[in-house]
Image (cartoon, rainbow over all chains, first blue to last red):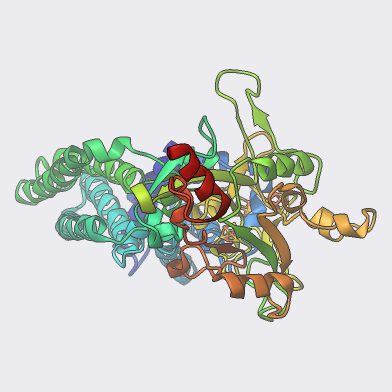
Length: 308
Length: 240
Ligand code: SF4
Ligand code: SF4
Ligand code: SF4
């Protein structure tokens, strides 16, 4: 699949934003907000990441002005469900943020914060399900696809939370430990995902055309001499060449290194803010590479008709 | 509504494509483009049409395959267009309701006024039947020539899809595949018509008829020794 930059930016930026809002709100949930400044700055950052991601995803539409129509088909479409959940979560997180900077406290604000927490999880879950449910892309039809989206959001958001907390003189250790554990889980999950992806059964030219009964099938002549929408959108080969290197970058630079930095920050509280900020940046960078691979490596069933 | 109609429609209009007789002339693809460029889904935008890298929206594409090799091998021409599936994921993933499957005849269509151009439906189609029109910003696809088959302004014998009407070898047939007694269903039964990529579960309405088994003797040169009759007599006379 063609790795479109707007989709990669959208999923990583808003994934980070949702994770950040989730941890800021949940670590505070017994009595939100405990630290007005931390919540004010942290949630503003989360909202900026989420809305810039959502905006990028709207801009890649052919008819952005009709985007509201995407809220109507939640009965059948994960994309529609994602749209609704995204708007609800932005509204709830936004209200919680306004309440926090206005110095409000109390049950109502707590309830709003909780709604924001739940809606954030549902949004990321829907994002994962959009891909996991697509039948023509065998690699994505893994029960790990959606959990990986969720834990990636959890990882980047928890590092961001740890860094912010230590910057505001709080103790970010709990968030850092959560991030560290998420990174270790993701290493195992990504390796399992890649192992499965190398073994999945794809449609072949023989099975797709039904001509396998005659013998081996090769495409003699394509249906068009230059590219078309289908060959450009669904076909992508560069990734397969660099896959090994990029996977190592994800595992080492994007997951192992931040996990180590997370641990160092817990040991040395003086430098924690520095360690955890770097860990946040590295894990988001890793998420971008992981997402790029997720799309670029995925083979679409239609390739079989083109002889691949 | 992008939920599928639950009446499992008895009427299922579609095409039957004969891979035995198709000669790969692309007439169906060209006439499809010609009709639809002014039809229900118009325009079918072309980009750089007279330049070095022309490309554009087409609803029908013709591949050529080599199946098997040497004596048993053969060239098979293979038109590919929307199969108007009974379980089309292209419809259920659509967030706007622009993609829909008609309850009355099973035709899968895009409502261009609702489509936001998110392209997710094209990802959900394993057959590559949907082509995005970057100029209009919406998704386009085969309409089964809905503006011909029900068009009362056309004489009755022309109320068939443009690709079917134009095929010089009658390799394309149109009809109701939901009715076991229809001509097309009978043809599918007689020739062992099959579904493409059945394992994905889309239950395509369109069927493909396999190439007939190859007849060996046709490709041998004629026997040099006439065995009987006048030719043998002439042969003997000349040989002596
Ligand atoms: S062939 Fe593709 S576009 Fe047509 S109905 Fe089936 S899934 Fe949808
Ligand atoms: S491109 Fe249009 S028809 Fe296709 S899923 Fe998106 S809104 Fe629906
Ligand atoms: S039925 Fe009509 S729209 Fe579909 S491939 Fe044939 S000519 Fe094109």
